[in-house]
Length: 60
Image (cartoon, rainbow, N blue to C red; front, side, top):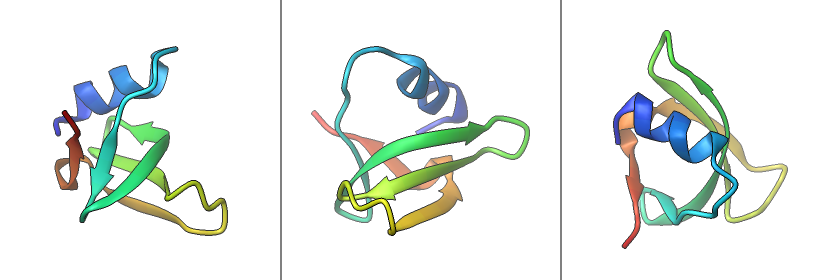
């Protein structure tokens, strides 16, 4: 996923299925300057990761 799309999803009031390595994630922040996103894995607030936006995939 490109950084702009990650930012759109983050700012949207709608819910989108986003995955990281097969796990569902919730985008918590997008760092546009560095192309990175902080995500919460599987609705678990203690399992957060900062990853490159290109590792995120939008579900169908």
